[in-house]
Image (cartoon, rainbow, N blue to C red; front, side):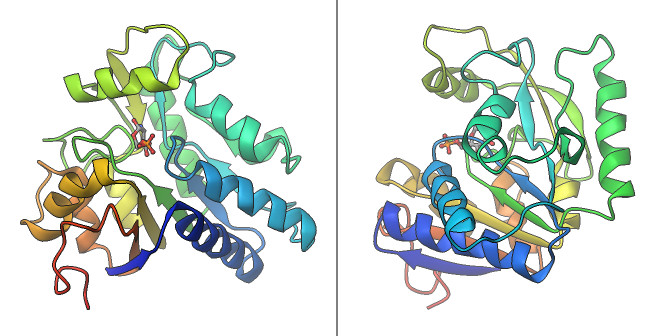
Length: 247
Ligand code: GLP
């Protein structure tokens, strides 16, 4: 795992946008898994702008979803898939048959999980995963205490996630369960980038990077990945010592 720090949100977003574009340039048929949420929002906007300006083709790129709220309709603002459709997939005109999201409205959610695992396997694995970190250390919806060996699964969301998750919605929502790729997917991905920005993430970043690797802080598992990069802005890195930042 490497750690890179950037001055501010603009800089980290520029760098993350370039990292995703470089992946696509190197492997035009990449399988990408990009987290929804506030952290990478600007990076995705910059990525789309640059891709258009520099005519970087996404015509062979495939996208798999990271996670989804259970019980939130696909057309509702706050739905993770809708976020990615609006910010990345529609502007880049990605064909529907290259997009794989969890069917979070399915009656049989276990079947939806199995389907996602099969798709990822069939595609030859995820080339690049870009994830954020929740205020409780979660990655996707891998909540504290989750098994590291899990692939796609349905999970009860812990209180922090239920509370923090309200920020994505216009009105209060009941957010009890999520469906998510597992930490095993993170470990199996060929490359993983974890992004965090803002002072509100400093404490959990310290716990993820400076304490022992443990599923109590699921994001800490990234330290066991041989090709992982943690991108932080100065504020999110502000509790780390130079040594903890690999300096
Ligand atoms: C959310 C999502 C994650 C996201 C993380 C951080 O709940 N399930 O995929 O990466 O928590 O979110 P944000 O970037 O909004 O801080």
